[in-house]
Every structure is written in structure tokens, then in C-alpha cells.
Image (cartoon, rainbow, N blue to C red; front, side, top):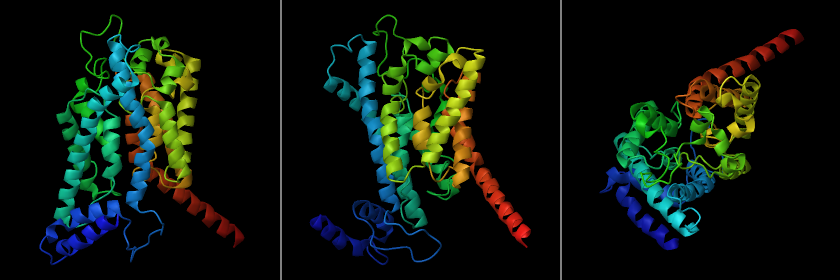
Length: 385
């Protein structure tokens, strides 16, 4: 590490103001602060001082995503061999290799595209490279189907970074979660590549064994065939779906990491699950269609509900920030997710739209919470006077 530090110190004068390569200062600063904790502190403005900078925060979130990522790779391989009727004979290594071959290119393309745009904007604006894409670049592949064409990943990532974030001023200024903006863009621009029964399984072809459709549990639930997917398989993640969204268990391990480190809001996570469970339980009593009859607890393990509750809804930039507002914000995400699932058979996955909707109203929720506190204190002061 000392040799690396010495190398960076030798390069640094050349990229500082007045140096030969001054134009690459933002790029150099991004790599230096990624490798070493910055030795400078905030000089002005109202900021909370803390030992952990933004890059270290983003690194912890990436660490929390690892269980879902690795299981996602395994499940990609497992579903591929299952479709061929070879799941019993394929080894763990073969399944992981199949998943690696399919998933790693999507991750690489996402990072290369997003970070490339981030570096360009940083150089043009002559400011530091925003660190937010360290997480967004990992989230985008995990919420996509495995057979998504790579050029679509490029287009969606570009749209998410430029339209979803940079036009608002960069990291910390965006209204919506960039990863969900990418997914929403693909869903509405290329619906055939984001829905259906063939996109969730790696290389699903006519070679698939008889009776294997590739349908996700949510699609099966909408048609009344949820019984083919057990609650245990849905919880563990041995089901078709987006790369990182299938295993509720792996996602909950990530949730524990976020809560333990204080980075993710347990209030938003808990209230999202509570809102989803309550809404599903109410529909269970109604039972007017097949989706309403899916057990409430099973609903929480299907689709991207758990992934959205843990990694998307808790985004500190686009989510609610007041403590009371977090309860309201999360609860409404859970409620709307199940509402969209139940009442829109053509789009059984509702968590994406629910989170984007509540991202839009998060500032309004915080405003009413703050105003309520002000009014309550004013009323208390008036009574005392």
C-alpha cells in the first residue's frame, strides 16, 4: 500500500491546477479517494461530521448486495439447467459458471457506461466524480432479466444517469432512484424484453423439457397457478425472476448488514413489509381473483418486493428523511405494490412503480411531517403563554 501511495503522490502534482494533465484532476481524485480515505474535511456549510465518507458508505451497500448477487448467479445457472432437465446432474460449479458467463457482462457494461458518463460530466463541470453510481451500477443489473441484450443495458444506464440524475445536479439531487429509472425506461420502451415467460431463463429455447414454461411466480399467481411454486422455494430463491431479486433470504442478509451499519433505515424496511402484508391480508379476505388469493406472507417473497423494500426504498436521496415520514413512506410503498399487482394482471410486478410514485411524493410527506411538528410546538407555546 505504501508503494501505491507513493505512486499516487508522484502523479498528483501533474493533475493539480497548473499541472500538465490538469484536465484529468477529477478522474485522478475519483481513483485516489476510492483507494484511500481523503485527508481533508468539510470547510464550510452545514454538514454532519462523520468518520465515514460517501465512498465508504457506497462500499458497504455494495457489500450488502453481495449475497443477492452471488445467489443470483447460482440461480441463473440452476434455472438454465432446470429448463434442460439437467438440474439434478449439473454440479454447483457448472451452475455458477453459467451464471457468471451471463451476469458478469451485464455488470461490466453497466459500470463502464455509467462511470464513463460520470467521468465526462465531472470533467466538463470540473468537480469531483459523484460516488453514487458505485451502487446504482450494481443495482441496475440485479433488477434486470438475465437475457436482456447488452445494448439495452447501455441505453437504459445512459438514460438513468443523464435523465434520472445528472439533469438534477448529480448525486444527492435526484428525485427518483436511478436504478429504478433504468428499469422503468426498459419496461416502457422495450416491454417484450422485460415481461413474458422466456426472458427470465438463460438461453431458454425449444430444447427446454416439456412442461417448463419459464413463467415467474407472479405470472403464475395472476393465472391461478401459484401452487407450482412453494413458499420455501420462493423464500430461498429457486424461482425464475430478475437476477438479484429471487432470494428473500439473501436479501434479508443484506438488510441486516445495512441496519447493523446504520446505513439503511429499518423503519422504511419494516413499514414497507408491514404495508404489503396488511394489503395482501385484506385481499385474502376478499379473494375476488387469483392474485388476491395468494397468501399474504407469500406475496412478500415474490417478485422484487423484498429487494425493493431493502435496497430501493431505503435510498436516502429519493426517500423520505423525517423519522415519521419514513414510516408513512414505507407503508404506502408496501400498500401500492400489492394494489398494482392485484389490479393489473398485465403487470403483476408493482414494487417498481410503487417506489417511483412514492419517490415523487417523499418531499411532500416530509413537508407535512415538519409542518405538523411546527404547528404542534406553536400550539404548545400558545397554551403556555
